[in-house]
Length: 355
Image (cartoon, rainbow, N blue to C red):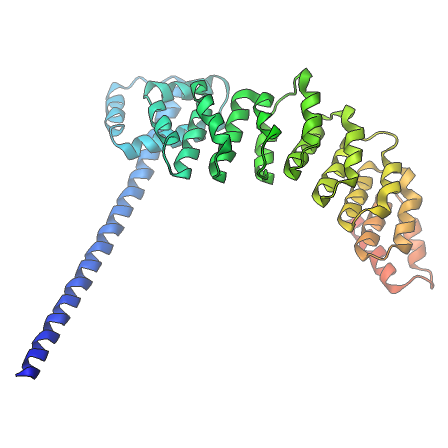
């Protein structure tokens, strides 16, 4: 009797397991079909949306039947979300009348409400998406709420808010640099720099204060701003940054000095060279390569012969090649007193010139 009960329970257990496996298979197949349907819909919807945008831009959007079909699609929340996404992408690619036409679609189909709802969500990616959409469509009423997001702890949110403020206000939108304590990534700095088209007359005091910030990334961004707009009046302040405790700041200072160079620049590079770490020394040699100044010739020869670092020797030889000292390099490479390492460095530099 006990063995009979045990067998019965075993059969029931097997049946239950089989049912669970069957349900799992059905769930996987259902999810796969749903995912395929979503992907297929997105592809077909994207074509419909892109066609609508194209018709609007070229001014041939007069097909009422197609308009009705498009309005039906807009009742689907996923379609509206994709429409908004494609509009924002398209807005970046066009300017002038085409950009205005795209903005018109945003308001005509009341997509602003959807962007506002995203801005007030809790998930970071939705908030960042809402900020991006409102900024792309130039909804100035959103500026106060977006400005409040500058202090958000989530990187995706505060970075998008920073970019949006600059998109709305240009240079004035950089006001957050006065108090930002989080690092600005290189990518974020490039986005911000690209959005700044000109500097107003009153900018000098702000630029000076940003150079004095304890946030190294703000200082680096400011140095890049100085390079972009060739702010010659800040040369002395940039030179002072060669004593900054952060090596990346010194490297950027060298690049900015080269961009706004004057007659003293090469001499200053030479004078501070021995006090700099190797990364900064290499940056100085890169700047000398760009400057092509004869003033650096003797200094470069000294580095080639006596510097202990192979990377410095190589860089010095490459600059000498740029200065037209190939005969000098060939001559010393053929001397018996020249070491094998130096000969290889010179051959490498001469070969680079041929390439």
